[in-house]
Image (tube, rainbow, N blue to C red; front, side):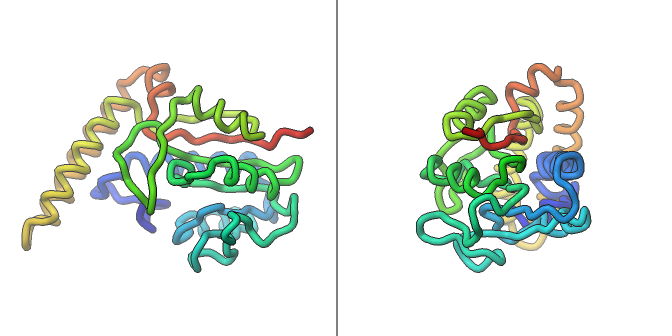
Length: 229
């Protein structure tokens, strides 16, 4: 995803999803992460949420396998911080790309204090998008179970974009891909189409019953804590 995902524009093809995700992340962090808390963004990429968290006076630090963050994840998947160093762990659209869920979730648990919080988002339904790999999609029940089996107790799950909106956004993504290949005016046509279809998807999501959207989200945002032995 793009660096603008914390403040997407309506002509971006993923505007509806990123808009909802940014809003929920801010709400959850404000409610459950105290100022000055150390937050590790595990698989941070280009750290699109760094400014958001730091504006809430959270001690945000990005961790990744390359030089994208201030903390380098080593070949074992470990961050150079002591056990229980973090009051919060952030994981945004990373889990579907992780081959070894056991190792990734174990590192989350190792980093978190006993009273720490995990904010994690991943896909329920979406297109294949390797970065560099893409392994999974979840149902709400499956995501809760997979995290629970790995020592992470889910407290809350929020769904972003129900099935009507998601199918519109998938079509938009495909159309925009081909339009942008047209010389000169292709990019403008793609942006105009994105505005129109984002507005359609917004309406479709508004008329989708919450019970359907909650079980069939394009993206799920989880709040969890580690199991205490």
